[in-house]
Length: 221
Length: 216
Image (tube, rainbow over the protein chains, first blue to last red):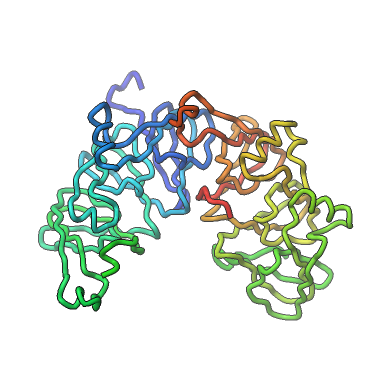
């Protein structure tokens, strides 16, 4: 790649079936969830990293937020296959925008993408995932996992979207999120419909929703 | 003969008189026609010596012999089923992953220590395979279970393949496997990447890998 400076070495992400991610690498690196490699050929080296940003600041953030995804850096020549507990895998293309995803749902990213942590407030708590979430930013590909095949829902300014916190997987684009609660007198009496809390997305972007609900506080009331 | 895949978790086998099938006990879902299921105390083929061998090797999954004429549906525990057709080569698979196989195949047990001596035994312990593994040889079809989908990676002499021991399902062909370690000081201080041990398969053949790191 020495002659053409603009031609970057980028790991090729492709899906093999719906549950296995194959990455073709030529000397470049990807970041993947710890222990998610199932097979490889060629030469690969695995090194542990820590999510939530780089450097000392990242370390402090990780300690404080509990959003410490254990990531490994995979580098080498050949093909590497990743899978995790037979979860469905979705490929996401990032062109300079930001992807918000729960660290437990993130399988792999291009090494060129920056990962960080952001505060989610009430929304995070309602998902049963804590108050913080992982962000992925830059140009490249990322693979996210869902329990069952995820649907991608587009949100535009005319069409806001409301999702169940337990079924939310990730979102990208320029979205504002707000927390909605439908708690009424009936809910307090234990007669709720099981849909007391929702997340509302407004703006312009994409939301990934899985056909399954995590156990959340919201699901119980 | 052979197995037809009804969907990803169910296979259908046709039974004709004179041709036996073996399947894991309790794996029959439904059948049509006149089919009998007899529990096989010996846990497979061979005489009393093979039976003792399997008991000792802890590779004695309860099997039943399926005979008669008709069609039988097999499936177990909602696991994914992969059909592998053998034409003269040997398949190595853990006994508890075997769903069903044709009687034309020769069943045996292999001592892992015979491949690579002490390292072979260590490998068996680490990958959870134990010291022995089941081999099937000859011409016929085998239905193997796995958690999640299964995919096949070809192995050629120029292209050895490394597999996570937990995701390994089976392999066939003329393949040598050895345990390769990537243990570094990072693993000693608890900063490992979770990929310290890998099975290195080289030779010519194919390896089947599941999309999950969970055992059955």
